[in-house]
Length: 303
Ligand code: HEC
Image: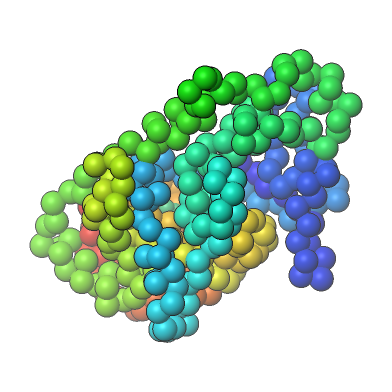
């Protein structure tokens, strides 16, 4: 995916009236494809985030994430919760999905993706996104009455089914730890990775038994951190231009390339690119012996 916008004097404008910040580069007809407008001076690439384990992440109470944000700053690490208005419930909630923690629930996440990634309106997002903001062009190609995702007599539609599907996709099972992996796990803590990549959180009470009171080994605090030079310049939801949510590390061995824009071909490169609040941990990683680094990487491969 590509996002664009315009920054001047430290103020970010998503250029919404020109179709930003998300670029819809695919369309049902070539004439309706979006382009990056000349007004944009920020263009950022984004990878798709993995979809497994999301029901467990959704079931982690807001209070748990807020308590992590309230911990005293150590080593320049001071995460903050992303507060967003959840479109589905209308409530202010702690965002936890997406690179910028811009979504709090799977229903809102799904409805947002329906509209912005696939061009399908729903009860939560009833208004079409015109190509580069051009309403006349939209009228020429959009011949289906809105909302296109029709709510049935039970109050449910495709966005609800999509949210349920994602809710119940299990995370991959971690591999058993070897001796080196066990040593790597200790290093993960002592180097400071676990300050942000918190090994475990616990879900609250949940109507779905499989999601209720579960230990979630996601390796994330779900907080926003200022990552310095890794920043992509895009302000989204509550997140600033250089902030990102700590990405969960489960399933890491199957999700290359790494980082928000996929710039890191392997895990070692991803760690060495940490900056801002991640700088102290990165420097300690760089200072490890080769044997220790391999132990840490072996641990990460087991997740
Ligand atoms: C200050 C919080 C913080 C600390 C400390 C930290 N990370 Fe991260 N980590 C992040 C954030 C935020 C990202 C996403 C950055 C991006 O995509 O540009 C990330 C990304 C990653 C990724 C890539 C994940 C993916 O799916 O692309 C790996 C691997 C990783 N970190 C491992 C580590 C290791 C190992 C350490 C310890 C040496 C560490 N991190 C320390 C916050 C942190």
